[in-house]
Amino acid sequence: MAFLKNRIVLIVLCFISVIIIFNVVKPAREKEKAALTAVVRVNRIVEPNSEIKEDMLKEVTVGKYNLGKAITDKKAIIGKYSAVTLYPEENLIIENFKEEENIKDSFLYNLPEGKSAISVSIKSLAAGLSGKLQPGDIVGIEVISKQKGPNGQQTDVRIEYPELNYIEVGSITNNKAQETLEIKEKKEKSSADTIIPATATFIADEIQAEKLAEIEQIGIIHLVFKGRGEKAKALLQKNDYSKAMEPKQSMPIQKSEELKPDEEQQKHIPPTKQKSPDNFDIE
Picture (cartoon, rainbow, N blue to C red):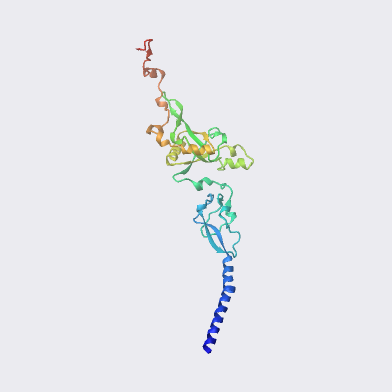
């Protein structure tokens, strides 16, 4: 009898345990699970002014307590730009991002691989395209250099480098190192010294950077506008100067030393051949 009573007690205890599990433990677990949420973080360090793409982001499950304004939806920031450095262990908030790529000197944060930034002097308003250039424009570069002519006189010679036919503008600054475009956009009170370009910074590969440093020393640089926007992108894609360039083509296209007096040139002109009515050559 005692044995049966013990079994009954055991069964009752088991039954009570099941009730407790389903009515106390399980709801507590569900409540605890409900207190968790997924937040968005970056999966690597992201520098300021970087465009946010989906492959930069990850979702991490954290507790809701004291979560604040943490971003929980990737779509809220994809396509925006980072305003500060982002770290993988930090929750992201909307204040970390900007709608547009408008941080000062933004192009320096995102130089393509193999590219560098280099500046050259703009000696006059005309040489800098009358202050009309904007970052992202594509230009060609020509140099006017003074060289000695055949009689020892100074002659202006136009020099053109195939490597610099298409090159991207990074920024245009005045003689106070201020962005001329920013001054115009803010409609600040301007004077001649604030809107006239003094330097141009270009995004260049190694060969282009070498040529830019060279021409800075030999003459007056003139910028020739080639394209803006979508056209600019297309021009950069076709800028394969390596195929067209021969060793001598990196030299000036015309040298004053090579110019000869008219009488010397006449000596080197072969006699003109004329055709007779019967199509025979006549000397």
